[in-house]
Image (cartoon, rainbow over all chains, first blue to last red; front, side, top):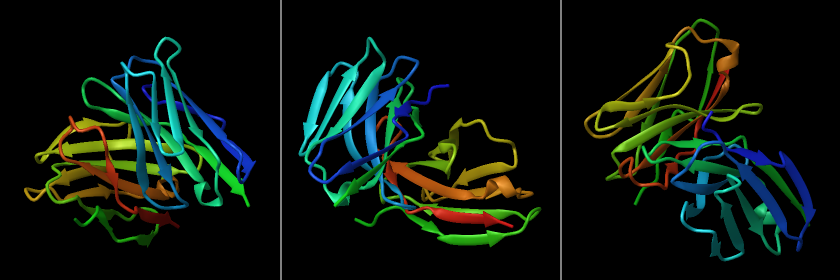
Length: 110
Length: 113
């Protein structure tokens, strides 16, 4: 399967703590994206990292990509209650196909 | 610019019936993808349409079909509904398949009784 797999499936932290989610995949990719989904709604694009990049930042988000290990991580620093959501990685391929993983459910307690 | 819209937002059907879901992409976006989301399976790719042609299809039975119109609006149809078809169906658009970022609609919640 081309799908990425997120780890952990669920994560619960206190407000102010950092949250780290991981994504692993099996075949070579062109890019990897992270999306957020608030309960029962559509997904919102957060950040994209290309296969020739190792790290990207956007506000409180930091994404790393290790193509040798076929894995990526999403770090959310100084988490807030409003960060409570599901986070999905999406792997993009040279044929422009995209596949999503099963997601990590993040709960940030106030 | 208006976002991706999906209609209806909620739908209740019984086994054996068929259903049609509609998606209007962002203006200027010609690629539309459909996903099925269930609690245990995450987002499963159904198919992608570009310029009225299906360019890719996921691993779903033939009961799931779709089409795209000349104005890029898309519909998906599920025939002979089964209980397991209960899910959130998400539509996403992008300008073209070569554009990485997808923009998602709010989804249609289908319940099959």
